Image (cartoon, rainbow over all chains, first blue to last red; front, side, top):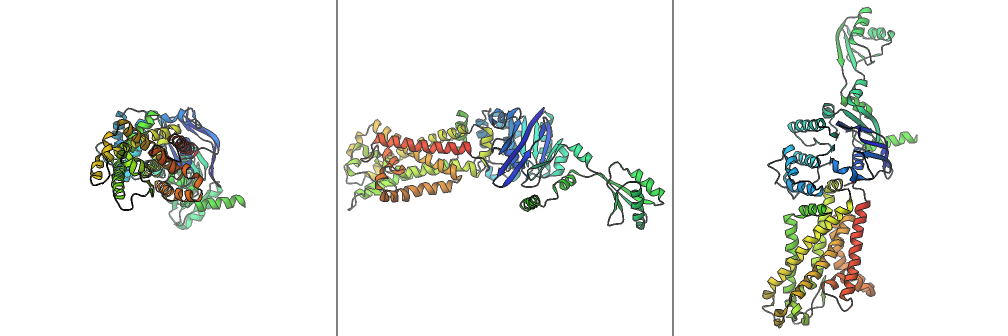
Length: 317
Length: 265
């Protein structure tokens, strides 16, 4: 069963197509990562799912409710959208109480979520006195208020210290283990790699990947770097490997890199031995989620407006 | 809807803001009283109008209604204060980003609007009561040095006081609704307050000079007529009817913007 499904979801803001025919299915249960460079359309997608903005075209179903009828599912959805938003002059408890009353929840739930995020004892202080990390915890507490089946968190670890990040990571995993679906939008690839089962990569409003993290990393080529004992043998080794239909390239330090799937270190060692080349080192390098992400998104430096302009020029030419 | 109102009451129960609202209201009530008697006892006598203020006649001041006359006369000032706080409580949902949480928690947006209106109505009623109490507290002191015969004040009835309270409450509510729609459209309390205050103090006066035929039907004049229990130009019933139209336009406009606009704040 899917926690949410979108069908050709498109949203434009003037000339900018923030979401372009987005069709994804997010399985129920587990932690789902939603990643993309700044301005890629993540927040637009989240806002549409929360009924805050309407799509230009397309449809979506969230927890069996259609997004044009958000009241049919939003009572089971908790969300932290962009930065935590609260009335600064009110206490943490009063801010949460206001939301609890709006959702017709018992006031005891306020104490429970404050406890979960570790803000008990600070709950009577005005939010304006909170650090960014404390506000972030309060934002997560607000998202947890309705005991949601679907939790959507935008950069939940933003501003947290390392121990706070570990706590939130454990919390998200625990929530997912309880059968909830947790959608996490983040730039911290190492965080996502540690907790996500499923990943959606989005850029310029287009979905580049929607599947499991294992499948993504499994499909990513593992590179093997071998160092001949004599660096001058590098070109001879490349020739030998090429004759065996194995693509290889020289590196700047006199080593040879092989990125072809299905080739093992033992295969390369045998080829080198047959060619009379002694290898000093064989190193297998498994690519991280961050490297895969950067390759897919084109190592954007964050200047999305320039990237978008380049994309537009490409399309026009 | 009740949940939305209860939620809004929690959110608007900000000690500083509410105290400022009530404090300013009481301050204007007190200032009006002292201003009236200062002008009345001066050689020139009291003018008919000041910026945003209509002064009561000597006959009114010396009647049983005289003790609550400052409430009606200062209604525009109370109105501007109400406009400011309705605008502040509305715009802060946008400026803090709280609107995202609210709309996600209660996707039926008209309930959010009605909840906010009911909560602010409650605070407005309290503010009108504060103004009334301030008037009664300061009246003996303000009138102590006057040459006017105010013995008729002892004949003031509950009905007179209640009518004055209702009139002030209704006029403050219409001003508040104007603040609410301006804040909803502009998403800024500062802009909404500037437009509202500018209208009362400048624009409506200029319009009255340029197009005198419509002067009595403009929002400020209409609301002042309600606060005064009717004027020569606009009867109480007509003022209430026109006030209801302005109120409906403001709340309808707020509702329409809330319903239709994307929440991108």
